[in-house]
Length: 106
Image (cartoon, rainbow, N blue to C red; front, side, top):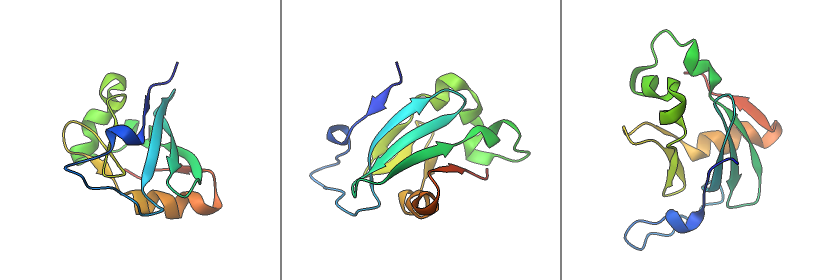
């Protein structure tokens, strides 16, 4: 069963991430993919598999480990990992608006 992080885990000191492009929920899928649902109800699949072939992934390098990748969580409506790596929810929302699957260029 895929793991899922919901909005109730998505708060910091009373801050409510209400922007429509903030991520409300994320589920980890096989093959380095994430299913995301935004506050406005739109959704899509974020394909992060290019991390496996990136020549210079920088802070994203640990995401190549399936165990580390699965540690994704929401912080103020953004996808984040324990090492501080994150993906901008506004960028994801824009990319997923027309197409329901998008490959992140690491």
